[in-house]
Length: 486
View 1: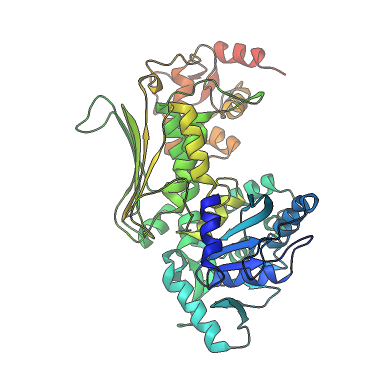
View 2 (view 1 turned 180 degrees about the vertical axis):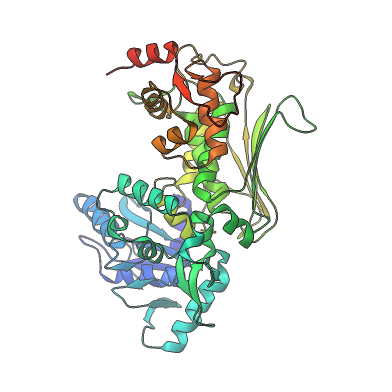
C-alpha cells in the first residue's frame, strides 16, 4: 500500500489523481471529485497532501471523525445519488498520517447534490446544464456495462415478487432504517438502478441486472439462454464428476446454492476469531460465490464453474479484463465489472466493500489450507485455492450427524424446521415456513440431509414421491431440540 501511495505522489495530480489539504476537516470539494471520478475513469484521492505534493498530514485526533463524516455523506442518498461504498485507508508517509481513497469507475451516472460532475485533467467540471455532455455521459455508461442493457418489454410480472421482498428484508436486516423498507417494488428497482432509461433511444425499463437478480427462471433464460453456473465435485471420477449442481436461477438463489454445494463437500475445521467461533470455510465460499456472480460478463456464453478437486478449489467465469495475467495481491486495485449488481449484493449482506473480497479470501485461505489463493485476470477469470490433505472430508474430524443435523450457520434454520414438523407437514408447508422458494435446492440441500441423518421421517416411507407425502420430526430430532433448548 505505501509503495503504491508513493507512486501516486510521484505522478502528481491529473485526470485520475487528486490531492486535498485536510488538516482538521474534510474539504467539501472532495465530494465533487468523488462524483467526477465515478463518472470518468475512477482514481485515487489523497487527503493530507497539498496540490504541490507537500505532505502536511492530518491531525491525529481528527482522523476518525473525518472518516465518519466521509462515509456518512457518500452513503446519504440525498447527497450522493446513487449512494457510494468506498474504502478510506490510513497510511503514514514521512511520519505523517494521510488518508487514501480509491474511487472505481461507476456504472451509473453519479450526482452530487443533484449536480453532475465530470473530470478534465486535474479539475472537476459541473456539466449538469450542458445537455450534450450529459447525454454523452449516459451513453458511455450504458455501452460500457452490459448489466445496464434495458429490456423495455420486461414488466414487473416477469420478475419474482418473492425475490424482491426477500432482498428488501435482507437489506432491512442489515440496516433497520434502510430506504427500501418503505419503497414499493418499482421504486425499489429505480432506487437500485435496476430500472433505467436509454438516452439514445428514449427506451426505459428493467435492466439486465434487474432480470438477473429478480427474474423468474423463464425470464432469465429468455434473455440470456446460455446463462448457467456449473458446480462440480471431482475427486474420484476425474473424467466426469462425483456430484454436480447445474444452476440456472436468479443471482440471489444462485449465491445460496453455491454456498450450500461448498458446505456439502468441504470440511469446516474449528476456528476461533478472538473469542467467537467462525466458519472459515463459509468465509471463503462467500467470496467465491460473490466473485462468480458479481464480476462476471453475462453476455458471454461461457458457463461459470465452481470445481472442488482433491488438491484444489477452482473457479472460472467469463470476464471483461482490465489487466492480464496473475494478480499481485499486494498491489491489487479493484475494478467493478458489474457495479449495480455488486451494490445490491452489498445492500443485502452478500458482499462487502469493493476490494475487500480479495483481502478476505487471502486471509481465510491462509487459515484454511495454509496457502495463498491465485487470481488470474484474462478473458476467463480464474481463482485457484490449493488444498492440503487435511482439507478433505475423510481426513478431517468433523462434528458427526449424530451430534447435529448440520454444523453450519443453518443450524437455526434446521431447528426451525424440526420445531415446525412436530406435527406432520408437507414439503410445500416447510418451504413456505423457512421462505425458500427453489424446490430443487430445498430438496437437495435442506430436506434430504435432515432425512438422511435421521432427524425427519416420511409419513409414507414406501412411496417417497407420493403427492400426499408429509414429514415429521423423529425421536432423534426431538432429543436434538431438547438438547439445544435455550
